[in-house]
Length: 73
Image (cartoon, rainbow, N blue to C red; front, side, top):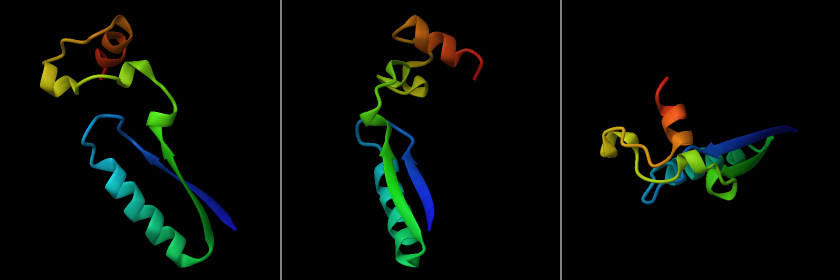
């Protein structure tokens, strides 16, 4: 049996990724040949992902860690 992890790629409030991830997981499980696990980034604290999206804050990052992560991307 194949094991697949579907990762929710956002921790923000009102995220769309939760609906998309559950839809994908349901579709994969319906095949019957996969073991599917949904992994939620909210369950794994990553402080540089906290807060509003940079597009909404015009790159006014709340912490040095977030700034370091945001500058190259």
